[in-house]
Image (tube, rainbow, N blue to C red; front, side, top):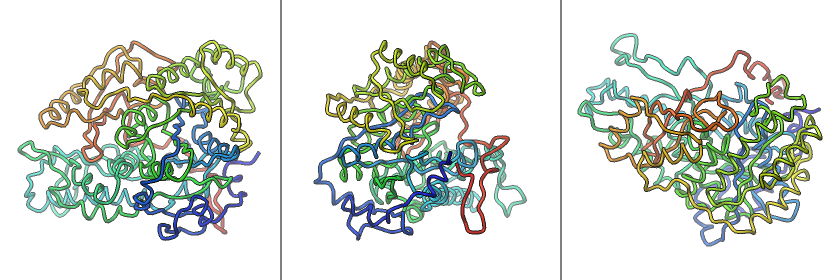
Length: 555
């Protein structure tokens, strides 16, 4: 059996000009990065305003497991399948972060015969967006320390700094550090930290910004810390929003690539859904909606994270109106959610499947609360047994959950044709989309409703650090911003050990972070880390390149 990378390397790609031409993108808006990648000017969206929008479909999943659910693979395959049944489609995805690629996740551009290509470039440096975001972020970090070192006119309190440093790598040793050692020439010693680039507020800002003016305004609103008088210090106070925007100006332009079957794809922006809002840029999605009849987009991790944030935050802020949701599940992932061990995942286990099905039910019920039609995509694996498929079918029927099998990993778009046809029927039906968490609720009301309605908690508990931050936010008048929860992806709860469908527990919030430029409050729950770490045997040990530059081991 070929690996994903081997399949990608054998694929025959169309030149990017042909992909751009297929959706009528003018040459003046194309900046080419070799033969198969291009950036499309974000300003092109202004010329498309009079065109009607296509249908927007969100792909999400059950709570993720190490067995894999196939969310990106399904997104890519579904877009290709829609083309096969005569629908003009586009897929919009996030850019992969290198840290997890070198860790345990491997490549993040789909899989099998449902990938976006060129796979190696997309998974590694691509068009340099992550590098530019890291550089702009760390420019601000350097400016803060330089300002404190030279007279500190803004009276910045080094003990009240909120702005960390960043890099796009899993590195647990950088979670808590000391900077400024080595004498006065190196600044003042203080505690500092790193977050992974996908968790940077600048990543979120890029994904939400409309243009360069909006970008600079959002950057200027970033709060880096407090003064000795207790006032917020912003990027505008430091006057570096122009320099940061200069480093980021090309990042605003969506990256155009293609699927393995030549379907156009935007891969742009990369916020994690377990520590940020978890969807690609608004610009990419809006442009795709103007250029096609159906846009397939995905939201990171399970529906309790990416989908909730997409439906409660991204859509209201961006003015998006989703028509349907595809909820991806696999039998082996359901078995893990039902308590089966990973070493026994290939064994038939109807009991674990039935227990794990409760996780699918929770996510399905949650999405219905938004008034959007939902269909489950069962991502098939060769190890699924006939009895397990029959059991899954019976559970779906008894719970009135519509589903369709998908074999896009093995068959490409052809393996998703039945799913595509059912999706078209679903999209043509009624949709009464409405956010579950209204923007005008208080912080406490938003968090309580989210914890109880989506996470199925019994109560919410704010630890002292979170309570202190909330008092500060109320004093400064920023407490009514939307909330983005950072929590484990492996459970609908704040505890990765609570698998399946836990309920009635206490949802614990340990801290709050203000992302004023992005326009939300990050609620840090449980033991989630904003800087991941590599495992004992990271995927990096398998990755290599030969004398001819051919990469192996990427996925």
